[in-house]
Structures are given as C-alpha cells and as structure tokens.
Image (cartoon, rainbow, N blue to C red; front, side):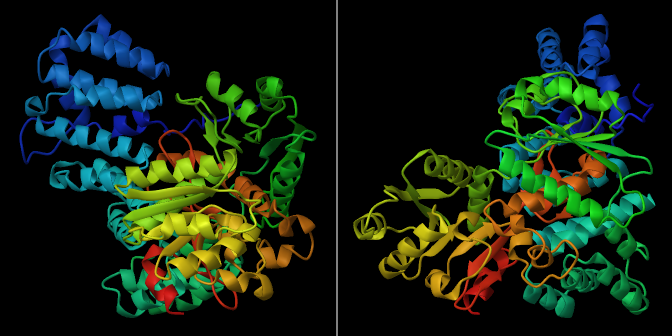
Length: 615
C-alpha cells in the first residue's frame, strides 16, 4: 500500500500562478485587493453558471472552464465581461492553449478595463510572451505595470517573473538587480535563501572578468553579490570549498544583505534535498535504441547519489521502461510500492502517455519533452537536452550580443533541417531578420561554392553554422576566408569535450553553446568532469552530456514543487542554469563557449563576447 504523503502538486500552471496575480481595481493609485475586487466585478453575473465554470477550473479541466467563462461573457457587460475574458485567457494558458489565450485577450476591450484589469492583462501578456520565447516582450509588459498599486505578494511575484524573463533575455545583471529588489520584500527565511542562491547562480552566467569588474565597481549591494558569485565560481563542482570561504569572508560584509546561512543553503542545493526515508524510482529503458543514453543517465544519477552528503540519501530503484505502452502502469506500480519521486521515463512515447492522463500522484521528472500541444498532467515536469533547444539558445545569445541579421548554413537531412527551423523560428520571435540560408552536402569534397554563394555579398552579421566537429573543421576556415568579421555561432555538436590543438586550432573564434559541465575543465569536485573522466568512459563519449543530465535529475527532483512556485528561482545545474516555466518544462540557460588558439574558453555570456574576442 502506498504510504501517506503530503500533496506536493506544484503551482506550476499559468492558472495557478496567475490566480495569485489576479489584480483588479477601479481607482488609479489605489492598492489592489485581488479577491475582493474580482468578487465585486463579477457580482452582476454571480450564479450557478459561474460556480460551475470555477469548479471546472479547480478540477483541472481548464479548456472546458475557458469555454464556460466565454459563454457567460457573451451575456455580460463591462467590466464583468472583460473580467470573464481575462479568466478565460488564464484558463487557456493553464491548458497549454496559447493560441486560445492569445485570441481571447485580443477580444478584450481595452478602453473598458479598470486599472486592476489592465495590470492583469499585462501579466497574462507577459506569461504568453515567455511561453512563446519572447522574453523582451515579457519584460516590456512587466515594466509597464504600475507597481505602486500592487500589494506586497504581487510585487514579489512580479519581480520573480521579471528576473526569469531577464535571464532568458540573457540580461543576467538586470535579473540579479530584480532578485536583489525581491530579497528586500521577502520575510520567509527559506524563501530568502532560495532567492539568494538563485541570485548568485544568475550572476554566475557572467564571465569571471565581468564578475571581477562588478566586484570592484558595482554599486550598492551588487558589489558584494558579485564577490560571493566569484567565490561560488572558483569552488566549481565542490560547494564545500565555497562554504568554507564564505564563512571566512562573511565578517567583512557587515551591512550586506547576504544571509549568514547562504553558503550552507548553497551546499544543500548541490547535495540532496531529500527527506529521511524518501524513495526514488528511476524509469529507464534497458534495451532498444535508447539503452546507451539510459546507461549514461543512470550513471550520472548514481554518481550524484554517492556524492550526496546531506545524510538523507534516498533509496534508488531502477525499473525497466522499455515497453513504452506500459508507461502509466509502470509509474502507478512505482507509486504503489512507495516512491516519493519518479525520474523518467526517457522515451518520448512514454512521456506522451504520462502527459495525456490525469494528475500524477508524486512529482515526476520526465527526461524528455512531450509532443502534445496541450498542458501536461499535473505533477509531471519535463527535462530535455534536445538539439532544438540548443539552436534556439544560439538565437537568444546572438540577439543579446546586439546582432540583428542572420544567415544559416545547415547540412542536408532531417537533423540539420530541425535545428535550422528551431533557430529560424526563435530568431524571428526575437525580431531578427534572416538574410540568407543554404544547405550543404556533408559528404561533399569541397564547400567553397556553397560558402561563397551564401556569404559572398551578404549583409548578415551572424552565421548560425550547424555542423559536427569534423565538418566544422572543414567549413569554418572557408567561412573565415570569405568573411573575416562575421560572428559565427553553433551548437555543442562542434565540441567533443576535449580540445585537440592539432585538430581544433582551425576553429579559433567559433562560438558555441554547451552545458557548463562540459566547459569546466578546471573543476576538481567529486562530480566534475575532470574527476569523473578517470573513473568512467561514459563521461568522455558522445553521451557525456546525458551523464550530467543524470546528476541534475537526482538533485532537482525533490525541489520541483518549490522551483515551480517561484518563477525567479534559478538552479545551478550541471546542464545549465535551470528554472521551471508555467507549463512545468525545465528551461536551461546554456553557457557560451569559444574556441581559442590553445583551448576552449567559456565566454560566460553574450555581454562578455567583446572581451572574449580580445583574449
């Protein structure tokens, strides 16, 4: 029989987050009381139809609730009509129907909105922009809000969302400033510690040089936060080193808002997070085409477990999920046997099966992303290392470097086409223009004609090159001969994890996105790639990044509900800075690497690109 457990279902969907953000008021400059103002606005339509619509929303039937609100709105007049449309938009967001939400807010009569409804609309538009990969649009909406009218809890929520959007826009300093402002509003000690860990993790997106600049010349509290982030960076994968140095330096920061327990909290974040007696079931295939990937993930999970110094190491049970059609039955059996958390499955078909059903009984971290367009089942979180995500991140980094006009060069075949499409779609969302693109034959002897045809007279300022390391060695020198000033960026496929001077020197100047674990060549902690490469061949082969995924999966599984409730939260993962969006998807912020003459540099972030060019 399953043991009794606390309901850990997170506030991870837009309807639950935005319910907290319900801001309706009628007088400019007056503080907003969300519950009282909505009740007053909807008083003319109160009755059984509205109660039924609210009940559908509460039961998780968000799509049906949205349609019910819109049906009631047909007979209502402003401002009740607009309130019902806003409720319908939130419900559509909860169902993962961004198109329905967008269409619904397009029908809202903006002149008829009260001040509070205007603020609510801005929040919905910000959430839509984030889900659509348009963080700058989300920032614009959040900054347009009249903050002085918001109660404290909504100010807290807004700042957390703003920090998340700023991070996704590759503005780590601005995101850190939002988290500093958020820290001043938090009373709960646990919330403050989570926020401060997120703050130093956010600053870690900067290069060491940029952090040192902030530590020397930063204003206000930022100076001290940069110093702390430098300590955390120098500790690398060994958080105990950071804890020791933090305690030694704490007395020098009198008056700084950093919490005395910050280093201990950071250590705990990277150690475990499980409660005594917790059990974790890991669903991975033992056979089939994903067996190799599953082995790497499993080794990463087991390595993280061995390195867990929290004293509450959970019991791990690995079960076979090869038969994708039985994913729900396997999951149910794990819960029945007492699992507190489930990691997996890895196969997309199995993730689809879990996503399509009712709410899951325990937090579940799927190691892939569902192909469904609608909201996944409650308590299901999706963690993916997809190449398409990397391509979109290249677009994000390029835009943050101030680049505006892109060209794309990709190989024939479905892999190249998928990455090109992901980059193209995100680039256009960010307002960039696509100047030219070309397909190349990866088996061709010579690429001169292809490169010259693409770049000969282009006005592009960035080229997205899709290639493996071997192909990049042949393509990149020709690209440089054709256009010496063009910024060239790629995905992690150009980096094997080991810099070979004889082979890779020709790639000097090429930028690429990758997970921090692959770029950290100096770290010496228990889970550093440098340490582990001596004990397992898995961390040196093409599946190495999945090993790091296993480390992160073990560490974030018990923290999923807390991270989902805090849009500003940012976890220092080995696969990138991790956060959870309003649909329960793990968002990864990758590091920016750059090939040099003698090795691979971690540029730290787009804001450091100019500095990296001069090294």
